[in-house]
Length: 227
Image 1 (tube, rainbow, N blue to C red):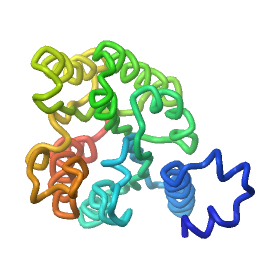
Image 2: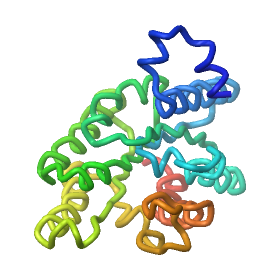
Image 3: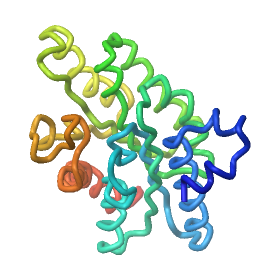
């Protein structure tokens, strides 16, 4: 479907829309239609990068779709919106969070920062961007629940950088009063059997573990009654 849309686009639009951005847009439209069909359905938006977007896999194999399946089994009134864009950074997320929440959201999961670390962006800058994302989300909806997904860097980035990077996510969660997902790819990162040949992106089986990592933190937010 994505390839068909790209072919039908005007050349100028084709230059603007990457495949990843188009996937995110289509996901938002479909999720919006689902929400309209059932006004009692709440929305969970996952703002992420290629791991969220399911790089190298079918969209249904990415962890947001797997979370939706868990939600459906539990018969909870939530729709998951995959707002993952391959290659995105915390700065990119800060630019597009308002658009990603344009149809509203009750829960925002921020799963960004990995590409920042791989590019050597100073952790303080990533921290500032992530806090900015949550602030923008709360301008859109002051009652929105927010979750921050932690990431870690490989040792070859240097001990000082990797330690500062690891610590920034708990700091963001504390500063924004968000729930922390300690390590998004815990049990997957560094395991060649659960990653694609590039050693970065989870396989289908790896995505299942990522979904479990998120689900453990997300589920209490879905089942806790509002005060």
